[in-house]
Amino acid sequence: IQVIINHFNRKTPQTFIAAHSIGENVEYGVVWEDIDFNKLGDVSPYRFYFIKNGKGKCIGAVLDMNRDLHWYIDPIARKKGFLTNALTQVILPHLARIRKEQHITINMDDIGEENFEASLKTANKAGFTLVGEMASKIECSQKLFKYRKVLLKESHPGISYEKMVKQREKMNV
Image (tube, rainbow, N blue to C red; front, side):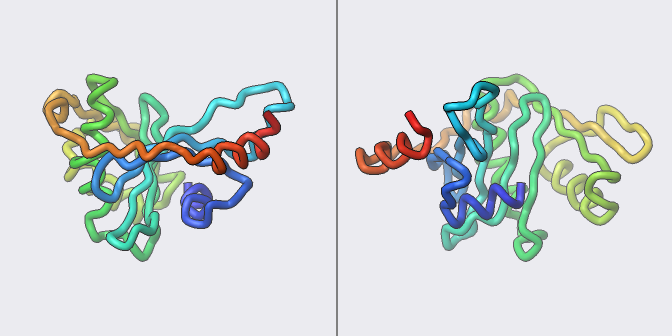
């Protein structure tokens, strides 16, 4: 996820990101990495929520894997409430439009003890409750009904003709 954040901030040509604002300091978008439409195979994008600081720099992201969410926050932006606020004020209300419940899995073997504890604390603050525990891995869940009435401030600025032509050239269409 950290690599995708770097691409988002630098707008590198190796990754195509189409994102739009869905709330204060959060953009929702799709990401294609090293895409080549001339090759057969899966060209399905990844769905991301990009979390920005007050200066517009992306400092974290949440990967939507349908049943599960994976998140990453830049170490210099941790413990400042960016992720918790983004989850409760924008991301979970956005997900409530398409699902009734959201699950997350936190695995200590994958992220280490310190990040495990921090992720668990964030999950609890965001309203998730423990539903399963196995060795170093836990599963949490949350019903999303309470978020259905939250109004989001979405912005769809569109794409300029010039940008569309450049993207088509990149994708060899």
